[in-house]
Image (cartoon, rainbow over all chains, first blue to last red; front, top):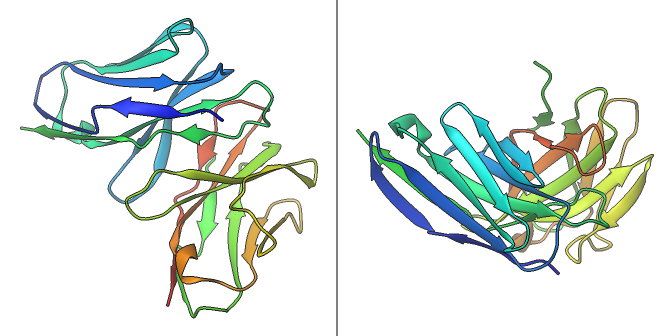
Length: 110
Length: 113
């Protein structure tokens, strides 16, 4: 059974700051997903990665398979980035079942 | 842009009643999932469905739960006899390929009184 841990649990930043959220998992995976959950509850997929690095706008996700660790970075943070960021993993033998971390609550103040 | 839809957005029911939560996945997707999130807790996997059968299920998904794809578009989760602890947000998701990016619906908030 894979355990997914995120840190920090809560993060407060000022607009413009560079933000890093970390995720570690205990067992080998086929892919790691970063998701965003807004206050209304909806979940949106940000990235799916199995190696290296991906970038989309101000968001960057990296993964180190050997270390079983991933980071999500937000450059030039903005109040609209305030949300819960969730790390989730899929195992190699599963049909795509996601195992979720507990989420990081990000608040960006103007 | 194609999206996953769920109905109803909020369902209130009495303990012991049956509920059916409905989802319409993205039309060309083949893999379907139900997840739930109890208030304040992490999202948990319930069941995955492919080729008209359950491919994987969690310990939570006991005999009280069932899933069905009654036609070419809908994907339903039925809870036969609801308990207080079934109160949660239920998310449907779909993906085109196994292990691919999943697209989530907006969720159904189930409240069991």
